[in-house]
Amino acid sequence: MMCGIAGWVSFDEEVINRKNIVVAMGKRLRNRGPDSWGTWFSTHCGFAQTRLIVIDPEGGEQPMIKELGERKCVIIYNGELYNTEEIRDELRSLGYKFNGHSDTEVLLTAYIEWGSDCVHKLNGIYAFAVWDDYENELFLSRDRIGVKPLFYTYKNGSLIFGSEIKAILAHPYAQAEVDEEGLAEIFVMGPTRTPGIGIFRDIYELKPGHSLTFNKGGIKIERYWSLVSKNHEDDLKTTMEKIRFLLDDASKRQLVSDVPLCSLLSGGLDSTAVSAFANEKLKRLGSKLITYSVDYIGNDKYFKPNQFQPNSDSDLVEAVSKEIDTDHNYVYVDNEELADALLPALYARDLPGMADVDSSLYLFLREVKKDVKVALSGEGADEVFGGYPWFRNKDAVESGTFPWIRMVEKRMNLLSQDVVKKIRPTEYLNDRYNEALREVPKLSGEDKTSSRMREIFYLNQTRFLSMLLDRMDRMSMASGLEVRVPFLDHRIVEYVWNIPWDMKNLHNREKGLLREALKGYIPDIVVERKKSPYPKTHNPVFKEKVKSWLQRIIDDPSSPILQLINKKEVQNLIDTDAKDYDPAWFSQLMGGPQLYAYLIQVNEWLLKYKIRIL
Image (tube, rainbow, N blue to C red; front, side, top):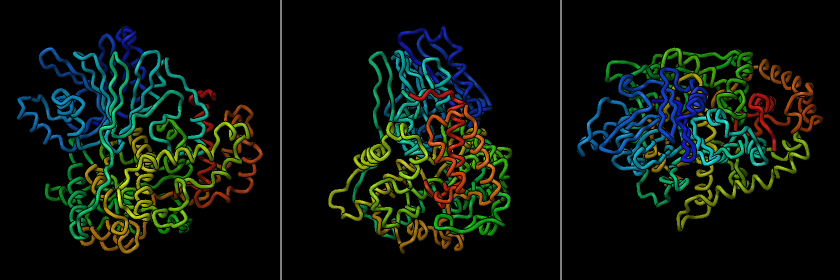
């Protein structure tokens, strides 16, 4: 039931008399749910929902209403439950009856029975809103890991929410304003985003694992899930068996669908494992898994290995597909189109993002959507099992900051001195880093190295991962495609969190424990393959296009970014081919060409959203 949800609740106004506002909010989310559309209103509440039909086309229509005696509850829901049948059976044992087989009806019934505690029963990805007409109360909740998005603002006594920021900005009470905090997020933290911050002034993100209740008494936010640190008691053999069981179970659970589905296969460890486990079940049912991979026109000619990208997916994906026996499809991205797609990728995210790393995924998934509606992905394994280079780089581990954020001082030279003074880059970065460290659940008696690695894992799972989940959700839903992430089943995340670093780092290899656990279950060539990230273009066509685009922007006196940058330094960036920012000023994939593209996206963001800088 992958969808877009939006709503407005006010106890001071009659929302029912201003239906057009809620309708406008919902229309901003039509790409998230192209199959159907619905609204619901009471005196003080208005809901809008767009639906991508995956389960129960007839019985899953939303907004969904359920009445029990004097109590009436209404739900709008974006997500998918993977333990629907278990919850349904429990509710049936309590006397409840169901009209269809959708997880929406199960979720709404669970709320009626258990109230806000229902979230503890759920295994899935979700963001949902329930209006309890009897209690005159709104309940919002978001999944534990934050796979599905949910934003809100509180203005003029109104609680306004939506799956994406664009829905909130359709409400007249919300303004496209950005203050020093938002600018610091864009230029210092970006393209990551601090949990809870919506960049736009007074717009917030409901954090993962949190719920919000709004009634006449005001807003109450509660955290219902968090990581808990405890001693890991299992030996290596038992640990690997549990990892295999949980990943196998999650991959197969997430095949639930009434529409065609596929897997995104890169030929790497994570996507191959998910694909192999899923295909095993599909073959037992008499079918075969469809898989897709992405590459760029010209990469076969221009690809050059570096410390962050040691090999190309194309070298392995065909062999892997043949060995695990999938029906494989290739998508090749044109580099001219890759640059042009920076704009739809920006609008999908509502914020400057990972530049062509976003736009390539957007183009890739747009092609996948032509044949299927649901895809499985290996996203999340690097954060959970320790796959990134900085997990094993002593300097990065001891750097005293987020290891993926680099060259901050150098990048600040590209901004005007007024902006630098306003955002206080070093202080802001340190504040956000220390804020994150204070959240880490410590384990008493843990040695210094293990304690530090627990911090590094926490930073990755709560800060870096959220950026990638934003990317996957927005780029897929912009095309009306649902992407599921078995590695982020909360049972896996909870279990692996407490496995000690020396076991995760088995054989001193990235995701060494996961590799060892998967031996004999996936091809040996994949187990031994060195970690390589999502592929990016190496074709100079892309770089030249974004370089000339940025030049046009700074030559145009009406460009809004000029109020924020040091034009002389940006011109120098162009003249020197941005070589000082290669191979990566951020993450593993964002080098010189991506810096050009990021600045382009900032300019277009300011322009498209008519942003007022405070």
